[in-house]
Length: 163
Image (cartoon, rainbow, N blue to C red; front, side, top):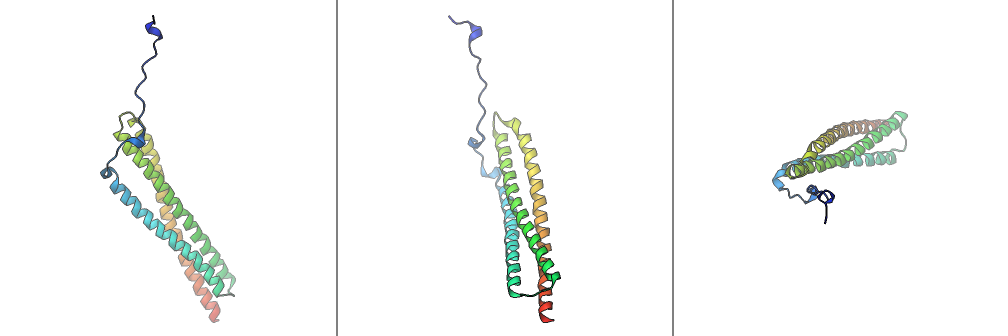
């Protein structure tokens, strides 16, 4: 018959699929609401920056002649507002990705076979949230810098038109 040494070894239990682990809303609902609030504000910065770029087009169309200084201010405001758009979009992407890792941590902590993965996901989540925070702050700063530059350009357009 069969020798005991040739029998296949019994495999360890398979690793759970994290997507199949049931997680109650109370474990992440507050974090999700906070994420939603930050992303809503980031969305408003995005919308306002795009509106500011449209205002530049309106000013260029309305005032056909303006000084080189005004042209430079308009170009700077478009650049700042465009950078703000990119940063706001980056914030939305990386904060969503960080929340993805946050949910993986919650599921790993509930898992029987995958608790060892939680520290790695926690480190990645923290890195992404820090990056998202930096993107959020710089999108806010570049938006207001672009808006102020646009306001100064508008004043220069009016001054050029009057004189």
